[in-house]
Structures are given as C-alpha cells and as structure tokens.
Length: 298
Image (cartoon, rainbow, N blue to C red; front, side, top):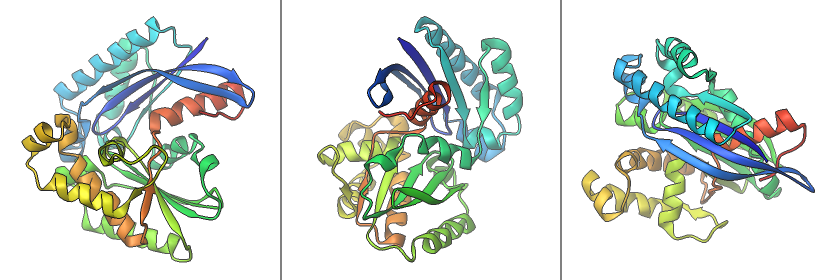
C-alpha cells in the first residue's frame, strides 16, 4: 500500500491529509485515511505585523513536528508541504521554514498564488463539468481568493487576489484589490453565457452541509444569501451555540459568504457547485501524477 501525505499551511488553519493510493483500471485513485486540522491563524500575525510572532512560530513548529511523527507512524512514502498567503507575507517566513527543516526534517514550499491555483487544478474537477456551461471557480482562503474561468472544460484564465477571510476580519483587505477583482471577473466572463460557480474551501463546504442540499446538487444563490442572512443575524457566540460551528469557523464564515455572494452578483451566477476538494486533495493528485506518471482519479 502506497501512502502519500499533503500539508497545507494556510492563513487560518494548517492541515495534514494522509491518503492511501491504489491502482485502478483508469490509473490511480486515493482514499482519505486521516485528516488533521489545526486552527493556528497565522494570518493574524502575517497580515497585521508582516511577520510571525515567536508564539505563532513555535506553535507552527510543534504542529509540523506532530505531523512528521504521524507521517512516520503511517509510513508515508511521499509528501508535499505547501505554505500559502500568510507565509508569503511574513518577513520571517523563510527563517521559520529553515527552523522547521532543522527540527523536523520536513521541506516546506512557500507557493505563489498561481502555483496554488495549479495545485487545485490537479483535482481534475473539469472531468465532471458540463461542457455546455462556463464556470467561475472560486477558492476562498484566509489570505487570498483564487479565481479561474473554465470554458469547454478548459481553464482559460486564472488569478489570485489578496482577499481572504482573515484579511477581512483584520481589516487588511483593500478597496483597490476588490476593484481589481471586479474588473478581472467582468473582463473574463463578459462574453460567456450560462455561467455557473464552483466553490471550494472549508467555509463553502460547511455552508453546503448547512443547506441540506443533496450531494452533487448545486447551492442556489438565494439559499446561500439566506444562510448568510441567518448567520449574520446572530452574534459570534450564538453562531457557535445555535449552529454548532467551531469557534475558528464561526467568525470566518461571514466574510467567506460575502466573497462568494459578491462574486456571484458580479457575474449573475445563480448556482454554485461544491465539490469536497481543496489544496490538500490537489497535492495528493499532484504527487500521484508526478510519481506514478499517470492521470489521477478520485
């Protein structure tokens, strides 16, 4: 049994996915074995102070040590560890990564927005798209939003914007960045008809579960707006007690809703599909493609 691991060091949470790889008639597939999520909130330091505090750095090092121990116990043969928006902006990011290497022997890669989008592409969501529709793919994270336009199952444009849930909570999102995103979306979708949305990220997954929509069915704009109004009408404490949200989800889910709703308004998207994939899934698929030289299927 081959076992691969993916580490995603995000602005809100840090994730480890350990997956079992098996051969099928079509190539190789994977099954999620273990998923660990630690809400470190690196973005709070990175976006406000442009560096990780000693405490956050120590917490990250401890988390990576724990991940390395788990990977050893599970006999992981290949892994890829990627750090995104927060670590891109932390002035001491490279220094912290060097310490992690010295202590845990893990290699971490700080990835740019385009590389992040490319890894998410490795999920091959286009396999399940309707060729008659065009799609705006929206991946919302703590520090950035990755957008891609798909036409005839092919990505025709993609861009990363420094707009994310932690940035918004910390008032570090800029009006000009929102305007850049609006203009980019308008330019790249203006000639398209019948545009649908695809949403990935922990918040849209949670919203989809809250909607009670059937698996594989899209979430309508009206239902998403209704959920947003419902959540926004409650205090942070109430969101935790009434809706059963984790404390580190109860605050970021509001700005996440705002990003999805805004993008759907700008493009007239009435439905958004929510495949349960993210950066860690893309990393596993990428490892399969790079190491087994065949196309990956989930």
